Amino acid sequence: MSDAFQDALAGLAAIVGDKHVIASGPDQEPYVVDWRGRYHGRAVAVVKPGSTAEVAAVVKFCAARRLAIVPQGGNTGMCGAATPDDRAGNVVIRLDRMRAVRDVSPLANTITVEAGCILAEVQNAARDVDRYFPLSLGAEGSCQIGGNISTNAGGTAVLRYGPTRDLVLGLEVVLPDGRVLNGLRALRKDNTGYALKQLFIGAEGTLGIVTAAVLKLFAPPRSSALALLKLQGVEQALEIMQRLRGAVGDRLGSLEIMSRSQVEAIAATVPHVTIPFELTTPWYLIVELTDTLAGVDLNEPLAAVLADAMEAGLADDAILASNLTQAKAIWSVRHSVSEGNKRSGYVVSHDSVVPLERQAAFVNNVEARIKAAVPHAKVVMHGHIGDGNIHVVALIDRVHCQDPDTTARLVAHINEIVDDETAAQDGAISAEHGIGITNRGRLARVADPLDIELMRDIKQLLDPHRLMNPGKIFSMGVA
Image (tube, rainbow, N blue to C red):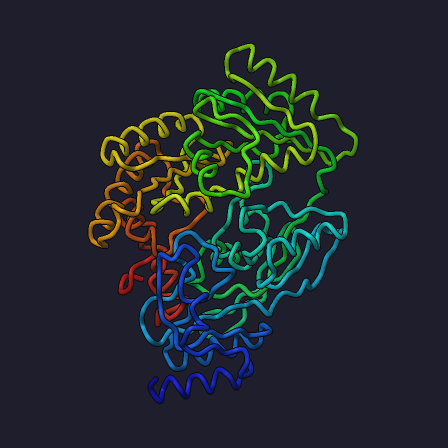
């Protein structure tokens, strides 16, 4: 290690303490490799500050020495946005020590938390005061709220509550020069100029480091009903959704769809998950109704809609969960898709979103084109059909992915098919996973040039030296 990097280590240790700085070596492995093992980087140091003041001091220290800064939450992202590149001078900043719940207000329905809080901890803190924080996803036991904000995470409750962007009232952010933007205002109405917080939600750490947030809370669901439907196609799922919205309104909390091939991948590779239904149709739809009133019988209206749907030939069968254990068993299948896919082969994953009316055409066209172009690929799908977000995943046997160049060409070909079909249906290539490293080339190919130009201008304004999470969203030298 060079003298300059040794001096950097010493300087960083002086700010946060020796035990909170991890120098290059085996101990860095969990922080310089993404969770899928797809991206491997290097860092002169992994730093774990314990306060906003320490984050600001670390960022100011790095900026003065032109050290690249890579903010990292729970490192559970799908696109490599939290992984450093292979330059020697990266500094990874983790906020694991910043896990305080600063304030909870049942009156205002808000919670103020530090960015290192695990999502499940935020949910639990809300539950302790009889409130509900609705963001929910498979990695909620390990992902951090700062990362959720930085990627504008979606999850299974978007249909009713919206994505993370809709759940944030205020932010505290350390800017690329070390200044602290204090926007921790728990205000439902604030019309004082530009909504600066929105710049940092979904920016993937390229404009600053979120250190704390004020989040919206809601009354907790006290009654629920859940069913699993067996369907022949996506068209039937959309018609059932329309009927549910007419019958139960906002009580429709979640609507999740999985292809048979997706469930089969889970059944074959995730032994601790039992599939609590027979695989007899091409598609499976999870429907969940919730109400904030206790004692409301939601099974009755759900059963009525499902009976009508089956009478109309929209569903082959329906399983109405009779208890919480059965409901959890069904949800466990849905929450195991990432694990099952990772174990099934090389994953080429997509995060497309298209208008609801065009989902069926998108699904049918993209599956047919991938199978025709790459016959050995297994196409699986799952997603949040109620908000238009269908994840198209091609699983490739790793025997076909031994050569990096061949793999890159294969991935590029599949990506082009999905992107072209997404564009043809007037959609977008990322609904909730973000851009990171994985999708930056795709973004450059399909995005409106004016969108790219404006994003590049904002990046230049806030981070003129391009030190904050370089190489993410934009290729190096572009932003």
